[in-house]
Length: 131
Image (cartoon, rainbow, N blue to C red):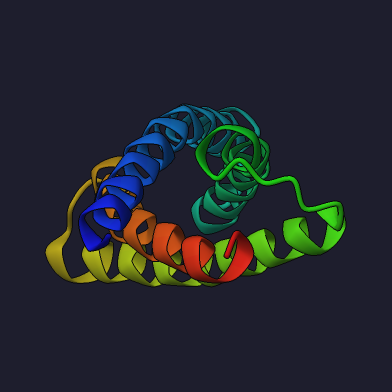
């Protein structure tokens, strides 16, 4: 029984990562346009990119990763966004730490922050939003 559960979690995590990759493209694209073209401050641009990706990721994860049929879609979406906002805080804090102390390029630092937040988002959504 536990083996099945482990396989199911791994399968969901793989799907979550694939959805997350599409979110990564959305996140980087929106962040880049916001920061470089619209000249929005880098941490605000980061929040805009992250939030846009979180919204698209919700719909893909609801349908494909977690196969949710919960009719309370606005509650579920709100829970997903709450977890994403906590993830945004973690993301921004890690981004700030890496830039300030390691002096790494903004976009490279953002990549590392996204890796950490992916693990947070998956387990928080698995056990809270889509439980």
